[in-house]
Image 1 (tube, rainbow, N blue to C red):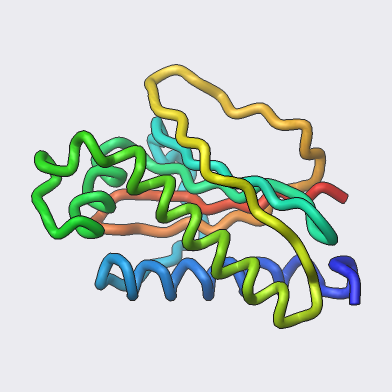
Image 2 (image 1 turned 90 degrees about the vertical axis):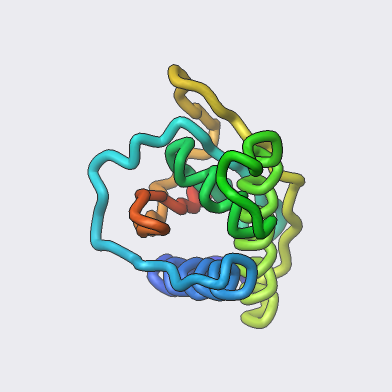
Length: 155
């Protein structure tokens, strides 16, 4: 079976399922999906590449306070105490969502590999990739903060 056999809407459901599982297990919290969030205020992004039968990029974007809340929950500390671990925690969250998504794809017969996460933080950046496909977007709230999980597929 090739990646083109599974529809893009199914990929979106698999990504959401993987994200829900990771948030429940690692953060002890449910993910609250929303139809759309026009501005996540994202200034922290974690990115993982996919290669093989399905090629693309999985990205988790959020603002700094959401990234700190994620790190604090993962580590069981206050957000202030999680300051130095924020980027690693967001990268690991992205890695776990990508890994869960990859496992679900493999159950459908789609073989792929994932890269290690890259985290970009700052107040003035734009991610530009050579991946040309339209992204599958999942918008959600965690601890009141907005985040976006997207998978941009290379056709």
